[in-house]
Image (cartoon, rainbow, N blue to C red):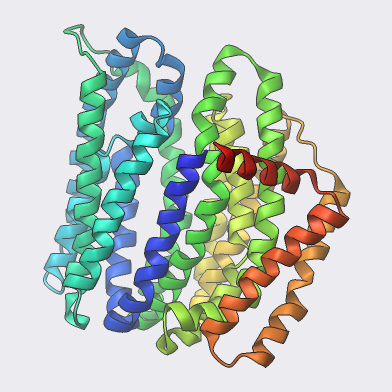
Length: 471
């Protein structure tokens, strides 16, 4: 958990440090171009993956104590991955070939990203619960990327270089993972059996494909309807900024997924329920105040991180502000409950409903509301998926949460409003407002939850931090 939080912290800090520079250098137009190609290539990354990352984490976790079975599984999955990666890259070329003359470097980089992501082997590292290796490896790469942004991106024409730096970072991580996997795996000449993986992979593939539609197609639809790179730049930049904070909420879930799969395979339902309930409480206690802070401080966050050019994006951030809590809950219900219990079909049902909802709302709302329509569609879609998966997950784990705890958390978060308004009246600089308001809100929240409401989750977090400091 410590290594995953450290990894998540760098994932948060890298954009926070680079965005104030990158957004001002490239501007919304060029960022819109980069983000559009990035989102399109991410769709084809999901197609190339064919559900293997989700499936592989679970299967690696259940076979990790048997070196022979694990090696056979890895060999079969790598072969399948190669087939799907080649097919997906070919489809990407057919889908984008008309756009290549306008930005050949961007689309070539996007194609490279598809191949690199297909052979990143993060599923092996996560399934083996090697979080220390993942943290050290990724932090080194991200620091190097951080330096590269400031050295290589000098003017608005360097948007291709900006995109390429991410690709090189992905490539280095993939090389580290490959070396680690090969060192720990001894392959035999036994014949492979690819067919046995196709049925479960098919369910994961349908699920991940449907996810890609409601996660990435909003941007594609927005670009198609508005034909405006600036609007796309506003929307995608804010969406990425909000998703930075989602990483914090789902960090614990990332650690627990292979553990939950291992426990489900061993039939230890009671232990699974204990972990799931703790994660639920953590998501609510950490997610609600975070979302309230994002909503209230949206103008200061946008102006400080992205600059004055992105101020029209403030309403977008407020619409999307509660995504960290919503997605944190759906992540618990899907990846820490339904997937470990091998309920891919139920997960798929929820995602298909979300996919239909997202596409329908985007086509309905974007023509009249532009980027705000896409933001409303995203929020409503994620909320519907969370409700459906929560109902389905409850059949396997009877989650327990006290209503009083939710009310206490909500009440304490509301106290942020007068505190932030006071900071705005006292300080003129957005950076000063953030610098004073964020630690003040955190201190107020901790004090009330710990000393007045005796919140058990806050007390456990405090004890956990104290134990780490002693260690």
